[in-house]
Image (cartoon, rainbow, N blue to C red; front, side):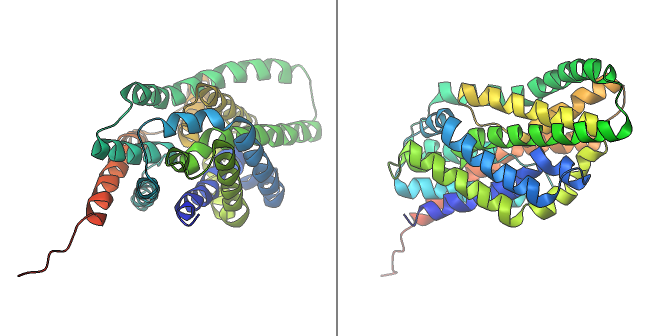
Length: 314
């Protein structure tokens, strides 16, 4: 089971980083205490992985054929790509990194499911668009009922707080259901573990990342969402959960970070304000295109280096 350590590490880093997308706004605005958010997120991530993680695992493991060695190479290459993109402060998608590394293995094997790849790529571009659409619809719908409640400040605070907790739990469920494939699908493809075990191991490793190292990211990265008012932040998280859950049903792992960006842009369209400047937009686009390419390249290079043979000079 030693090869699984690379996947577990990927799950840990995913949980530590991506938990901010579902509970960052609530924690950094002090609407919800960190440990309350971390425990709830961990529980719902595991539930999402175990209950709804199978479709994504089936999709990724079907992109190419794997041996155990290739599964480890793919996982390590994806992790390196995520690290490099993070160092250069480019928005990173674990899903794109994992798929990119799988493509690299597929190129080396000469076996790549192009139909499956087309489906995955289409959903990548569809994620922010769908999240933006959900954001616009939900904002108008919720605002209609919220404004008619005529709540005082205290009542409004309680309602928004409970809404953020509910949206965060749903977002964590969607995160686990959708992204667990990024953690362990390659090991299912290699025949090392079953789909059910992959879902459980992946979910638990993501939860460990949330519990042990998500606090700094939640308290800092999450502040990007708090530039919105609490009501808008709630809508963004709920839009994230709905859009990611939608793609989970389709069996395609997508990026929660891109879903957040789409949700924020949806709010911006409604309010007529610039929620994102051009420089940030260029960074986002660079991250989307470079992440799978870099992961693919590392997957090929690592595989090549491992199989080099030293021939002594005669």
